[in-house]
Length: 122
Image (tube, rainbow, N blue to C red; front, side):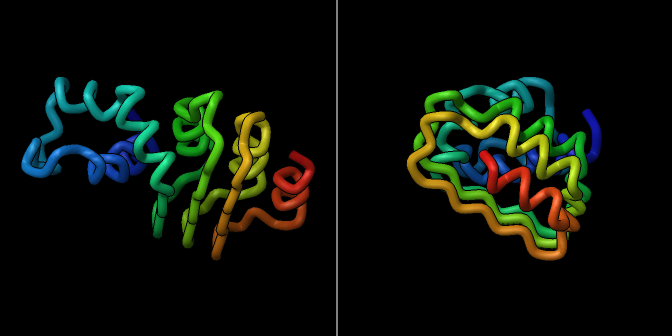
């Protein structure tokens, strides 16, 4: 896994039962649990916040690959995460069609006008 993948995995770790593991030693079985669909669904339904991580294209692909197709509500906040135009476009391409509520925030992420336009057109 890349550093961007690890940032996403560590973010959703907060949705697991307390005391399940120590983040310093992420064993294979815990990593599988983190990647399971039910944990991701809970994380997406609760809203996700990312701060000061190098998200980029790789991290955004990792994140959107786990977006459930039937998701109706999505809140994502990025602060200083190096999302960039490409990351915003990747997110725009993969937004679920059934969304009824969408809230996105990008602060200091470099999505620019082209990235904002790609998201607005979806």
